[in-house]
Image 1 (cartoon, helix red, strand yellow):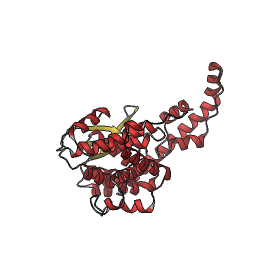
Image 2 (spheres, rainbow, N blue to C red):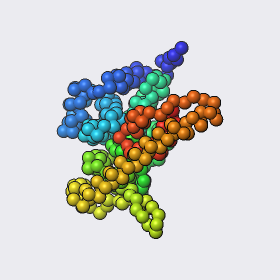
Image 3 (tube, rainbow, N blue to C red):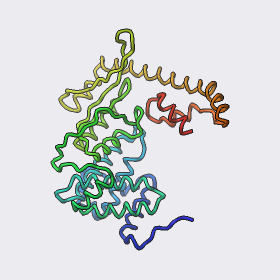
Image 4 (cartoon, helix red, strand yellow):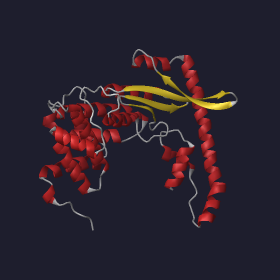
Length: 326
């Protein structure tokens, strides 16, 4: 029997906000009326307030960010991120603005992910409404609850992560989603590492998202080379450019394009190696494990494995997780 959330602990506005978010999730895609509200030339304190409440607009923006990882959706994610930033900053008008915005984004992200758990969602909806006012005591309590450090409102903290991955390698988040999570954590400098090559549209999305959130983004490409008779790995960081356009122009130079094409060939070779390992697991190791453990496991499907990897580059780590997830 499904447990009902006790109405005594929540007021009508909590249920209203939850209904708004769940309506967004049920629809899957944004209706035209809401898509038009994501336009960058419309101010959150303007006509948008007459068309839809702030909670609804924030929910739509979060859903847009947590949605598709398809390459063609990059511009949609950027628009959603810019709209989300404007919404959370306009909703928190106190001197505790940035920390309030971080809390609102984190709570709404958790609320979207808690679909199907009504009690959990109602608690988060209530927390969202309480934090919305920007009262420092409540915001600090929410920061502690979500294991987030309080950051200076001057946004001059020394916080960085020098090696992360997005969905284009072995991560599970789109570049924009990765930057949003980094901003929520208070990170100001981020190095995103790719294997063997990187695509121009991925770099453009990262740099644009970084400029929206005021995060200094560095691109790293992990390459292999021979050194004293052995293979070594090193990360080539694309740094020292005048601006983002300068970096993108550098990637379009013929020598760089030739190097990246060689990197793509290396990635294709590595993919063939991983798929060969998958086939070898089916032929040799799976029957042995089944016999030793007394189980009957299904044969791994190559196409299903590639769908599991998604936009990333297949690796032995992906294969191990795929086997474990079964």
